[in-house]
Amino acid sequence: MKRLSFSFLVLVIVSASYIRAQVEDVQPIINYNALENKLKKSNSAIEDPKKNIKVKTWIERGELMMEIYSINLQYLRKGMSVSEAKLFFREPDEIKQTQDGADMIEEYIYERITIIFKNGVLDDWVETSKIYENPLPEAKKAFEKVIELDTEGKYNEELKEYLNQLKLQFESEAVYAYSKKKYEDAYNNFREILKINELEVMEGVVDTVIFYNAGRLARELNKHKEAIELFKIVDGYDYNNPFIYIFLSSSYNAIGDSASGVEVLKTGFKKFPENQNILIELINYYLLKGHADEALDYLAIAKEDDSENISFYFAEGTLYDKLGRFDDAKRSYEHCLELDENYFNAHYNLGVLYYNNAVKLYDEANLINDIQEYEKAKEVADAEIAKALPYIERAHEINPDDVESLKTLKTLYYRLQMDDKYDEVIIKLKEKGIVD
Image (cartoon, rainbow, N blue to C red; front, side, top):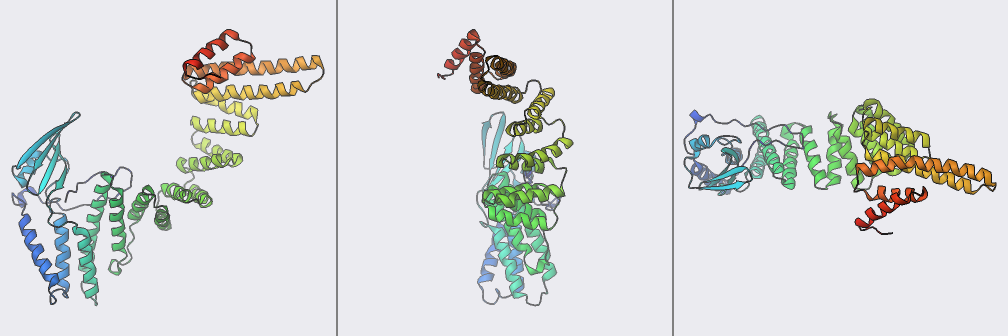
């Protein structure tokens, strides 16, 4: 089987370990034929009505299947050199070379296996002629037969050792499948480990890491109800990982249960009050729901732990703006610019903030009947809209391709009777295919 010690990039994983033979202890060529002969004997034994009722027959079959699975794992490892591999496999029948960008890929083709080297070191391998197509489920089936026949539990300790080894092999398969983006295969292999743990002989062992990894994969496969079940089990064993609550919440949201989703986040926040990821999820939830006050409460907490996070102040500014709290919104946006003077969003929103406030002032002025009082009120509105201009102009400088800032500039130049600037903006909009 082609299984290397791959790094499980996203999932938290406990690496499966295998005893690897030392060079001086092994034969120079791997003896596949010996395993094939043992398999023939095992196949014959399980068909024999006298032998297939013996515990030994099934223990030997399970052991054989694990040996078949690990035959290449004993000798090959990721990163080994060509010369090391040749100690066990000798010269290949054929060598194929291809160039993949800057990498030289060499395929050493043997009768049963193709070993793949990248830039002179082993990267992967593929069994082209398998002794048994899928040995691990067959090993599990054999050990389950042992349990069925061993009614007195005489072989429990021995069987438990075999099952623990089998779990490591299923884990190795899961990690490898994940590295190849075969998420369904990875998920199924983790589930097999959980099924093994459910056997009475395992005495109620709980692998929280396996539950967690299975939950992650279930979520990636959109099996959200299964993911919820798995993450809740992990949480029940006090697994110290804040991401459980984030993933659990997202799965609840995926099945339309946002109420449970936010409650899970609150639980996670109580348990991990300093975790920014959970806090941000809570803020985003309330932002999406339009619950500004709740979002502001969590933003206040977030800023205490990360006072330089510009996104917190920007979100705060938008919330204050939505609540009509002009001075507070202005203060938040200005703080964004103190942190980053080239922050487009804050420049643009500050300009819009002043513009919208000016519109209100114009509306109020239009309600005044006294001409002198009207002129005074209009002057105040004119001054306010003029304050918007430098922020929108700066936003346009920072991001000349942004259409909304151009449209806003057109309106401002028109209001402020800046005809030359207005004409320039019209030309820019037409160049972008926008004609009002």
